[in-house]
Each structure stands twice: as structure tokens, then as C-alpha cells.
Image 1 (cartoon, rainbow, N blue to C red):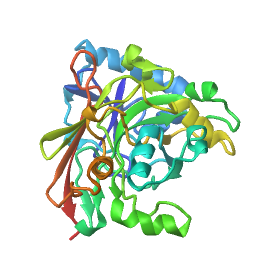
Image 2 (cartoon, rainbow, N blue to C red):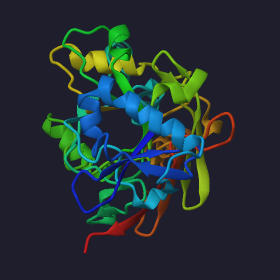
Image 3 (cartoon, rainbow, N blue to C red):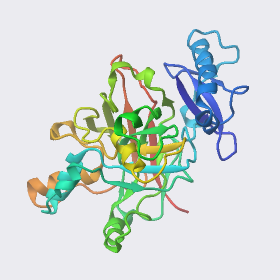
Image 4 (spheres, rainbow, N blue to C red):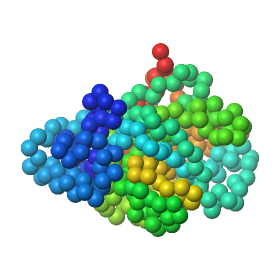
Length: 327
């Protein structure tokens, strides 16, 4: 099934069920009002939502209405945790090669991960507000999952069973703020503003054979200012699958229902697939020509991130945002 949170003036929005083709929706009133409620009581509530989903898809839902992605908040508008990994080691290799740095051997065995702000996610069509273009505004096209409870010590295989929903993410980065922050030794903070997510989050059964052992074998499309710049394959080159990312967190703590875990920038070794963030494009330019040519995003720029299924239909809906100044 496909779930979304509609704007209603509250912090958490109103839970809706969305049809498979993303054309119609139905409020989940009577079952749950917020997605976190469902995650907290999944075994009881999800079958009821599945029934509503099937009625919606068959045209039998009595109070269906046209689905409007622009009315969506993030599927989970605020979460108990947002942990973003760097599961595509090619991205790390490119960025480090551009600055003539080696990739430590441990990076191939243990995923990189940072904990970002989860109190203020933004919707798929909300503007990205930034105080200055000088910050080095970049998009990052990613995949993300929402978890159930996963206990401390869980293996990667066990952690896979804790995945409830899959969605897309735009993990906006302010590249020119990153070096000074990393130099402090505590990692990202100001350089990672609010993250946006796709209109809907979907259950694993909706993905069919595209979902294989914690990896989504579909193409992630990135379109910057109307020009398609990335057609990156999200499955084969994902070094650490989502079960491994979740298990990484579980080494020292429990993961609670409603945690959001990101894949990091989707990246392919074959440069003809394009890029899922501008920093990677700049790294390629530096490797080839000695210096970057592509500038970061400006006010007024747009970014669209989307994944289509084998039938050509959008799976999660599109993240479609505009960069605007803080006023």
C-alpha cells in the first residue's frame, strides 16, 4: 500500500491512503490519523489500511478524492530519528579521489553514517529555503526506509524484517559549510538543513521483485532545472543494503518504530548514468580536468527526484522543489 500525510495545519498532518497509480486518495480516519500511530501498532492497523487500499484501487472507496502531491507533507513529517548512511561507496571514492585522498579500508566494511535533524522534515513540493547562495546549495537524491522496532544487537538479516516503508529523499547539503564543520571533529550539523521526502511511502509488497534483500533495483532520476542529470541505478552498486545500515545503528542501541534511515547519494561507477548530487559531478570534473566547472544551485533553481517502476509509472511520486532565499 501507499501512505501519505496531507497538510491540515497541524505538525503531523492527516494520514491518507493513496491509490497505486497515485491518482486518488482516501483519509484513513477511523483507523489512524497519523502515520506514527500505525508504525506503533503495525500488526493491528496495517491490515485495516490494506483493506482500504484495495477498495481504493478497485474504485469502491466511498469518499475517495483526487490526490495532490503539493498538499503532502513528508510521509512522516517529524520522526524520532533520521540516520543517513553512505551506502554507495562509489560516491565516497569519487569525492576522495578528487581531493587525492585514499579511502580507508574500513569504509568497505563498516558504513559511514550521520544523525540529522528529524524534527522538521519538509514536504515533496515545499521550497528549500536557504539563507545564502554562498553556502553551496546541493541536492542529494537518495532512498530511505521507515522502520519498526528493531532491537539492539540485531543482525543485518533480522534488521531487514524491521523495514516497514520505503520512500525517496532529497538530503539537501550546504557544501561550503561542510569543511569547517568536519574540521571540528563532530560531523555535519548546520551543513545539513531540513530533508524532503517523496509524496508517498510504500510497503515492500508494492515493489515486487524490484526489492531484493534490502536493495531497490530501480532507476533514480534527478532533473535539475528541467534537465535530466541523473539516471542512477539504485540496486546493484549499493555496497551496504538497508538491513546492514539498520544493524549498524543497532550495534549499541535499539531502533524504535518511526526511525528513518537513508541510503546516502545513489551513485554508479559508470559516469554515463549521470549524478545524484552536484558534488559528485564536480568531483568527476576535478578528476578529468583538474578543477570543477559546475556551480552549485542558485535561488530559483528547481530539482525533481523520481523513480519509475518497470511499468513506467511513478512509484513514490516526485520530489519537486525550488530553491528560495530566506526573507
